[in-house]
Length: 277
Image (cartoon, rainbow, N blue to C red; front, side, top):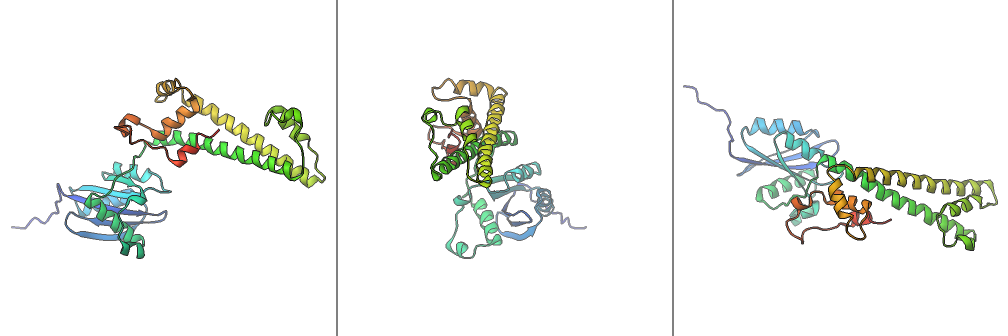
């Protein structure tokens, strides 16, 4: 009688550490009892899924990678391929001194797989693709606000550099239509200086129009599900307008689902900048 040698890992857990790079991934695979293999592969979630399913059929697959430039499409693709993935903050990975001294892709991947197996990793919250794209719009507005401020400071710096005094009647009307019209009439000695200053003013006007368009798009987004009712409720709080409400909703996402007490929510430095206006 032939002996059945078919592999069966039903009920067992397989742990996969991924060191993610644009052109390749370093993969380290641990079982519950031993280290299987550390190798490089093309950046393809389906390729990884086929490998683990072929070598560990029937197992429960768990993987982890560090949050970074690659975003979360890999996280979604791994879940779709049947791998229970988590994304973590790189600063939260337990690291031995020897690993710091010998840091490379293989060491990092093995460290992630080992820590995943040990239960030492706490995942970050990953928003769905729809919310991430909405947040992209909100953060683009934050960048536009900062860019507009840079142009304003640059113009004020040039006025001071050339000793150009702002007229008294415009001193309290900075960046109004009348103030912009006055800027356009400022004479420079040479055509090069005139062109440079005119370009600077035009860049400011372009950024103002860009910001106005983004504000319009955000206000339109606030009238649609799933933001409409929540944004309307938030704007009943004194000091919170539509833009601030949308920043809160897209940065924090599903507040009741993410935070079970008042001590957990934190506003990061990046999200704090979005409140500038």
